[in-house]
Image 1: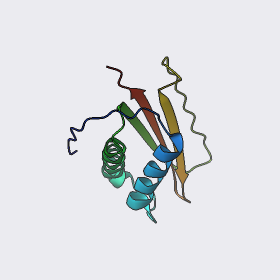
Image 2: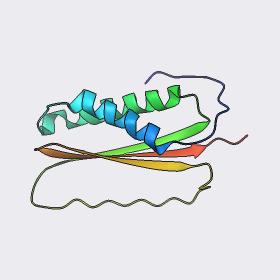
Image 3: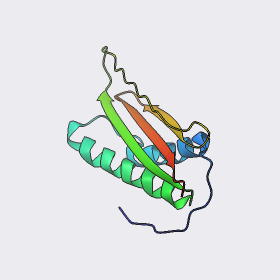
Length: 116
C-alpha cells in the first residue's frame, strides 16, 4: 500500500463517507464475480488496501483499522460482533454489508482520532 504523509488537522469521522468509499471499492473488485475460494485472498487484500488508501487520502487526523470477511452464501448464518472503548465524540465506526447471489461480504472501518 502506498504511504501518505500529509499534515492532518480535520477531525470528524463521517460514517456515510466511509460507507461510500468502501462500497465503491467492493463494487470495483467484486462487481459481477461469483464466490471462488481461490480468489478470496486477492479480493480481500485489494479491497482492504484500496479502502485504506482512499480513507487516508481524505486527510483527516485518524488512524484506521479495517476488517473484512467473505462467506459463501448458504443456509447457515454468519454472526459477528465488535466492541470499542473510545471517545464517541471523535472516534467512529462504519459497517458495510455487501452481497450477491453467491456470497456475503462484511467490512468494518474503525476510525480513531489522532489527538496531539
